[in-house]
Image (cartoon, rainbow, N blue to C red; front, side, top):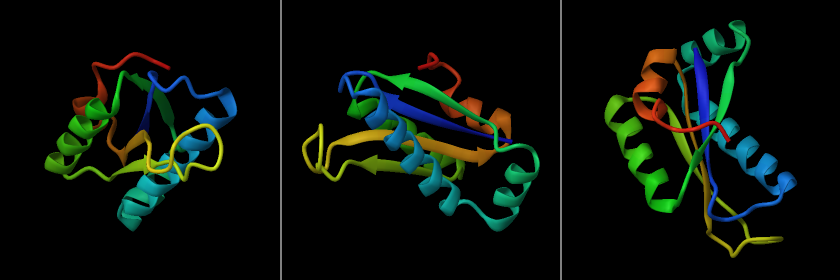
Length: 112
């Protein structure tokens, strides 16, 4: 079990902003998962990986694939209080789900 969080590289977010967006995505996708998947992921160490995407359209492509595969996922839109305009899409979390299912959606992406 793992979760992949995909963050946009084209926004040049500061480290703190990036960390916050990744955390928002992780929690939102966790809440989208079944109780069984949440428990299995927690019991297996809550493995996470942070990956790169070059733009908003890539995040939506990946989200559509996760949706088709029935994998919990969440898109994050920034509130616009600091570095970004309100509604800016910043990140996508895929999973928690079995490693191979998450890899089927995000396996071709580079580490952040």
